[in-house]
Amino acid sequence: MIKKITNENDISHQIAETEKKYFSHPLAEHEIKLMAVNPAYEILSFQKNGQLLSYIVATVGEYECQIIKLASTKKRMGYGKKILTAFIEKHKGKNIYLEVRLSNNDAISLYNSCGFIIDGIRKNLYDSPDEDGIIMHFSNEGI
Ligand SMILES: CC(C)(COP(=O)(O)OP(=O)(O)OC[C@H]1O[C@@H](n2cnc3c(N)ncnc32)[C@H](O)[C@@H]1OP(=O)(O)O)[C@@H](O)C(=O)NCCC(=O)NCCS
View 1 (cartoon, rainbow, N blue to C red):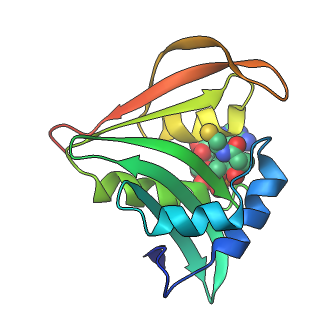
View 2 (cartoon, rainbow, N blue to C red):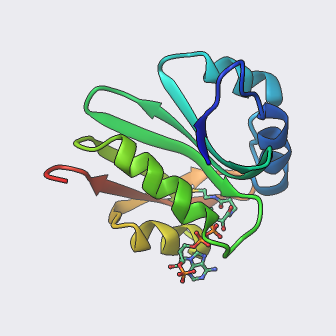
């Protein structure tokens, strides 16, 4: 089931644990709780029986969104695609932007498979370790 994270439906702890597993600058549990109640952000989760399978953290505006984080708790089970397609569907008509490490082939493949296109490369976008970033976007116009 796809759910928007709110105070009543709080799996911030599981998201924070997944953040620590994958990201050099993980979001902490208290930050996730604050973002969940801030209307500038949206956190969607794909869960089964209270277990987190994948999630997406994004800023959402009237015309565009920026994906900040996306992860699956188990890879290659379709969980990443599930949450990303739900997000795209929910934000029909908006452009969706994201940045991804140049070496992150798993994520780039997922974004390609969902219709994102590469806009360019930003030098030294990331640290820990230092790396260039790829800028991608999905044009939701007309869908
Ligand atoms: C990137 C990530 C979210 C992908 O999620 P996932 O649940 O493993 O992806 P899915 O199983 O939904 O795969 C969907 C499609 O993406 C592509 N894909 C995903 N991983 C791939 C890989 N390792 N190799 C090739 N294609 C891949 C495929 O097209 C796949 O479809 P298919 O399985 O039918 O071939 C996951 O690898 C992850 O959590 N990585 C760590 C966090 C991260 O790097 N997030 C991105 C930050 S920008």
